[in-house]
Length: 293
Image (cartoon, rainbow, N blue to C red; front, side):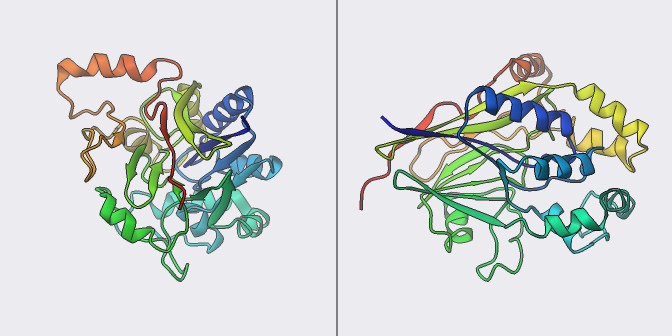
């Protein structure tokens, strides 16, 4: 049976070692296509290097994230409720320059694909119906909320990022947040491999690849990245520990349960051990077949 294998990852945020690691994994797994779902820059010490990497590898198809869009608009001001300071933005933007800004402006917000009749959308997050802006981040999504947010998207499956925490939820469409490739407490890059078969059925698996996270932290300090100590603590050590939720059909929602400083002490060592296992699958072997209309 014919099939298509697609590697998907998101929210690289200046973490070049994680970017290189996950792409190496996708190539080793012989993915036919690779997609990055936005936010190439900020937080990590390699914003410029990451943007240059993506433009040097046109086989990696990209959509524009909110941080990327700030760069296009030269928005250096700290946003309300944002942890990214103006000083950090200035450092990142000055390292990128005008030429990369113009190139980044060519990146679309949404990519639409169809594999054997399965309609798939790749985006950073839901946009307003007129495509004027990203919708506000909902940290506690439900199928009903996602159906409303993505009502104007014509797709069977929507892959997105933005929140950094992997989850999957089924409403009128299947929604999959692939999480951040490297903004989490594990010493591994993570992504998803989607495989679509000739009859329209599909499966998707979470995959991971180790990388040198301490080397990333050393580079933050060496480059005097503004707020690097806070960024390490908030984005690279602190993690979400929400329990697995259930959708309205009573089926388990696939959601990553990961180590947090708020976890009970007796659970921490087990969670740490699980998270550092190579190729730990958090969205493993989920498959579905959409009925023919």
